[in-house]
Amino acid sequence: MAEKKPKPQDKDAGKEKGGMSMAQNAIGFVVAGVIAGGVGAGVGMMNKPAAHAPPASEGAKPGERREEAREAPVVHMGSVDVPPAVTNLASPKEVWVRIEGAILFEGKTLPRGDALAAEISADILAFLRTQTLEQIQGVAGLEHLRSDINERVQTRSQGAVKKFIIKALVVQ
Image 1 (cartoon, rainbow, N blue to C red):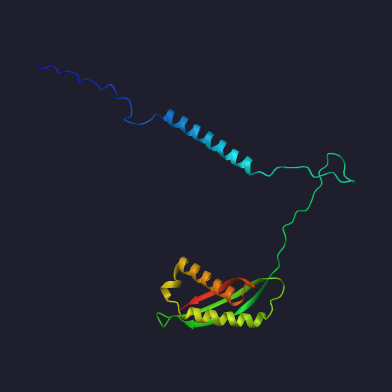
Image 2 (spheres, rainbow, N blue to C red; image 1 turned 120 degrees about the vertical axis):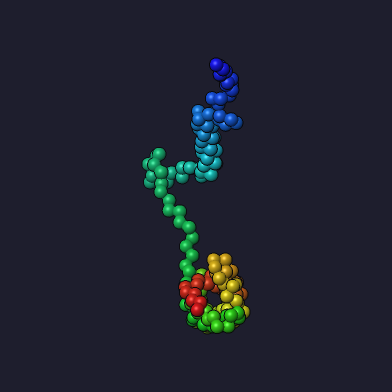
């Protein structure tokens, strides 16, 4: 009978080809984590404000920190509702748009506030008549519409109005 010869086994039969063992992967992850933590701590230390003790006042005890109220300057913002603008778009003509909003300004009152709001509403109406449905669709279209209206509002008010807030936008 013919005898079967055993096949020679490869020297690398037990090793993964081109890969690292599980222990080597774990060591790599630990080293990467330590480096990332060190970099994060270093950046955090650089951005941390220095804690200086305030000068001691006459009534304060030595070693006692005095609490100072550090408040940011408060800017009072006023608002005026803008009359809604209803118009059809440039293309397609059968699509109508209704926009409601308000204008924000610094201070408690806005000179000629109601008249300015009516002028802004008329400007928005004229602007919307030049827009197509494709230009105002989606997130990008809404963002472009908002920035264009804000630019027109600031120009019309000569910088008195800081922002136009869209309260409602209906397209049908």
